[in-house]
Image (cartoon, rainbow, N blue to C red):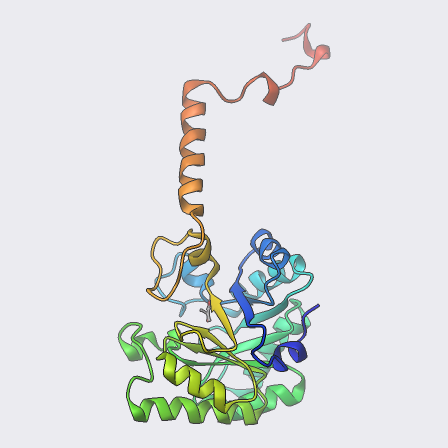
Length: 270
Ligand code: KIV
């Protein structure tokens, strides 16, 4: 079983693999494939709940998905991604919400989209026994502030702010850091600066690990960001299976004799 300690001590020799999952069957496949960390991302909002952004995802939504993923995961570390405004407003509430993911839903750690406002919260959570994965660069919960999902850390001041915040979260006790949509040379510099591992998404090859949204990897998403890669065509497979089913029902080919049964005792009445 992968632990927070295993992830923390990764020295970059063997890259950390991390993927999102939101339901039990997907988590089972991801876990069996040997992925180190399963992230129950708030991207569940876009991927599974039909929202345009991650903002409407609630603690109850996330908790339901974390429970499903935890029940199906035997080896990987399960990380719960804390939803927009479920942390960072009131410290007590933040701790309760995050603690619920460990206490009731079987996660081993939480991820916070981090900024200056999460340094002391990371310290408190870590001290209380809630391991924190930090997340810097593009933090999608700031979509309204950004006006979209632009690259981050693209000028020297912004890059330095990310490097400093990364260090501050490491010092506060974070066990790893997701770096999203930042220049690969900045990601390489942050990776060199930190002792904890970095896990990149759109952050180039020099991070200690990589993460993607599972729907992008398997080819289920209708749209994927430029930094994602499709490794399969599950959408195509689903479309053709459903079309074949519709055609088979409409033509009377399904259900066949092998999908039905007759009951001898009913012969006299029907
Ligand atoms: O919610 C999510 O899926 C994430 C990853 C893309 C890092 O935060």
